[in-house]
Amino acid sequence: MSEISVSDAWFVPYRLKFVSPILTSRGSMQYKTGFYVFLKHGARIGTGECSIIEGLSLESHAEARNELEELCHWVKKTQRAEEGKCRYASVQFAWDSAIADLKNGGNKILYPSDFTAGKGKIPINGLIWMGDEEFMARQIQERAGAGFRCIKMKIGALPFEREVQLLDNFRRNYPPGKTELRLDANGAFTEKDVWEKLQQLAVFDVHSLEQPVPPGQHELMREICKSSPIPIALDEELIHIAAERAYDVIDYLKPAYLVIKPSLVGGFKVAEEFVQRAERLRIGWWVTSALESNIGLNALAQWVANRNVSAVQGLGTGLLYTNNVSSPLCVKDGYLLYDCSKEWGDISVTFDNP
Image (cartoon, one colour):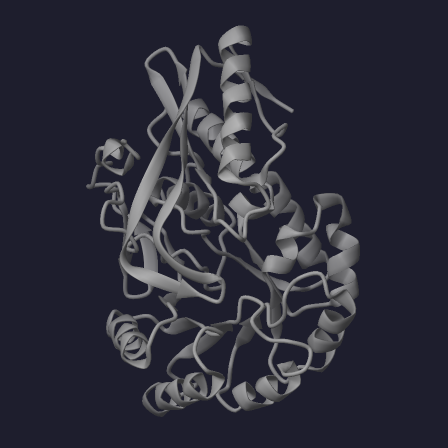
């Protein structure tokens, strides 16, 4: 692993407020908390984000905080920062992001490319959060009106028959030839109901369904991946697979797609492992943000842009918060762009000040 000279290191907790409370199959969220990591050398400061989602991340906020304290103490003692040695996925993502930023000048350009030069763009999906029918229908209209040609809808929180009706209304207005539809169940189905639900959803010409059942049920998931009328994408399943076991488990399950969240699976090195193994097995993949602020989203977008992807990515979460730090990232006609004419705003607007 490579090292870099660092004169100081610290971290700050943040607290982001959702524009509207979001509903998932794991419950409702009004706020998102985490930590920003700062590494300094001379006048340069590299920034990373430690993004934790309670109930989804394997580590707790307390565990992440403890490791960050250890890492910052070590940097102050040795004046060095090393890549790739963190215990927790969220910390690894933040640490490596901060190192990459510092290496490239501390201007939040982690991975220079045509994208960061304002000459490239990344296709992204329009995300529809769970809620009542009126709320979800309004989101669909907004995303479609904004030029998104791929809509990703989270399901599993409402009664299933109401979600089916919502999908029926969606397809009446946005036929398959016009709009791609991705679904994310977040493990909401059970062994008893998954097959019936898959059959009912298949009539809507669904591109893919993420994580129909909870992770860890490998025999059931293998059969679903094999026999489902809808192509299956693994999401939460990947969070519970150690990098060294990923090849065997993915090869056993044989999904159609992998949904890769670097801050939940172990940073960019592990994400790269998933990409390489997916491509070796001819499995499709895309990267999805894990509710990061624009700091983490920026790192994800730049990493993805360096891979020259054509598949639609899940990087449309920058507008979720009322107090997100302003950035050059912008969304236009279903693409994520880096507007070089815009500057980064004051990150302190997101700090969790008591």
